[in-house]
Image (cartoon, rainbow, N blue to C red):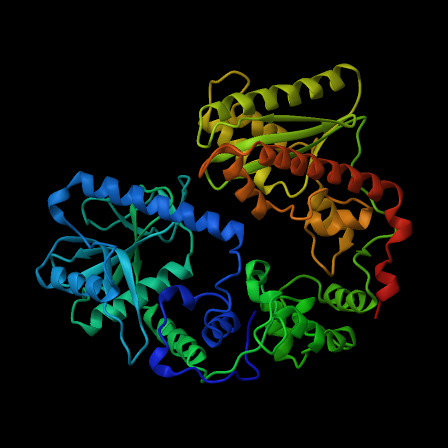
Length: 545
């Protein structure tokens, strides 16, 4: 949820503290959390958020153990089981003593500014004095760079020796949250005269292969403005109101009301807020043009906004009109088309974090076939199940060609499937049945690999979203499990393989049924698009200006 509007009761400023993680994301959620302490204490945390937090903690422990083991004499580890005051004092004492590297440092809270925070690593700047903050994050911060001309090469350094150099092997993956956190820590170090004059910070990403160096020179001004706004929100000095953003999917406030109020979703519906059909930055642009409600967007006349950069504006207007009419889909064309074949296979995978893909589910001739491993990821047995899946799929394809028949394999939103096809081919190269990357590329680039998400996007305007769970019910499909979702499946998987306790066989059944329902949903959707959608879904002309 986002943006300015009606104020909430003021929170005592002396209680208002803010860490860097609150600088990115929804302002309204920040305000609700501050104004309603303890309300969400009993709310079960989103399974996907919990899994990502646990994965991040495991990543930090790995980095800590390997870096300290490489040169233990350089390090001081701040004991994590102390009070915050004791940890902060130990951190400042270590810095005043000139310790080379500090793990788990916490800086003193600042009652006047509200700042609080710490870093996984503080590195002493031996050339200029002071300390450089380095954060350890569980996401990618760089990508491999193919040999090509480039105007910019990021600064990186070896994990164990601080020697910044221009790195021609990688390109930067912009991560504003990392830069904001480093700027936050830099300001806190400055307060104690302990910030390196170099004006830089570092980040160790998921690959754990280098430290990416961020120049904070041009970041600090934006950080200062952002921090002033966010601390004012927490203190109740800057009003907010809801607006739909991607974060809403995992926010408990979206469907849960604070005491004496409405949930964010209920408020949005009551206001008929334009973000319901134009979420995120789209709503911000529309509000700048005086459009605050779905009704006002639906009634738009005249030229398109000159600063609109989110696809055809006419379709955004149609989306608003369809929402008011209760239409879940709008046809772009008179006919609805999707590629069909004599032999059709539906494919859906299940993965766990970045550890691997443990299940490739398929549907052929109404028969569901899973290729899987229940060995906890990461596991070498994943290579066996992937090789068996690929071999079976290519055998079906080859037999179709031999019989003079056309072939197609279908998925919904191919990004995940493509990612794990390529990564599995690379990780398990040379194993029985495992293809080369070139063989994977030849298949996914062919017309025989069909993305139903792309087909939906091309054929329909979708006022309520384009996810399979949104679209397949329009075609008449229903999942057996009311809690079915990719995020929920993360928690089911942990129980299915016994990560935290004894193996729960019922969760294995649950995952298989969920995967089977996903492949059946794509098949039902495809048949519906071919046979009935043109007669059941209104067209653009029905909502034309």
